[in-house]
Image (cartoon, rainbow, N blue to C red; front, side, top):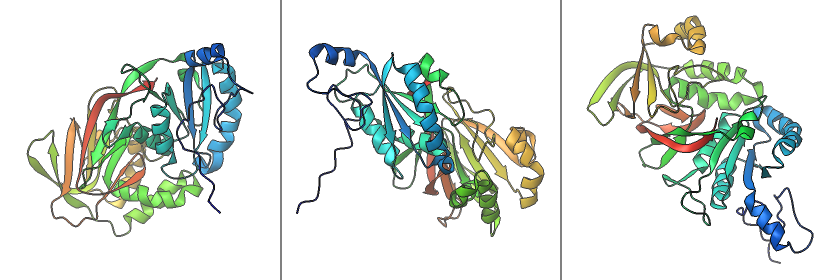
Length: 338
């Protein structure tokens, strides 16, 4: 017996005909007038990871959805897309954009936003709607847990910079907050194993990362210039925005509307330095600390002085791979509700 067919994961946007993901459907053939009215309404796709934040995302989304319908019902069609596993939000976002969505909105934290942002691109190029004009663009939105939806309702948008990173295979990957290298990336890799403990996962990840850690000599190339050696690097962070690691303000002067990335380098830190200076790292006052330097770049390549292939790289808290890696900024790449 033939296996049942799986519905194509596109056509995410509600149409005049019924669809499993639609918030509205017609019983019987839709009239031309209803179809025309439907087309005048904006289509907003909300991408929800129900298991995010130890399940809090799913619970809070159920409370938020009726409020969204009340606030937005007269302006747009609301499409709810529940993700089922890793990278699903990337696929959902790409299909929504191809279907002509006016906005794709990540509901949750950094991980969901990271996947949605990567869904805006395919093989390094922006994804485009298949049946809309060249002037159509899909906006990016974010509803962090516990915050209001006023920015979505207002509909005010700005062009947001996006960070791009390329490993040895040159396949592009995108980030919106912070990418980082060595100790902090290794800590993030291990922290993912302890997410059930909430923000304590970062403490457990850092403790495990420190075990056997050695500061390493790296080399960097800024804006296509000459290679320069940086000695005893503990961590190197590339910020499009300011925060990572459960609220640590690691790149405190980064601005995702500036067309630049902020690079913060921590050199020759010991485990007790983190304990003594942790409050400054979280508060964003660490740029004046000995062993900390900061530069603004449009691109930076980072590699080992002696290649071992074991220096961790992550972006937005998601493991990317290992050095060498090139980072660059795409100014104003995505319209963002702000």
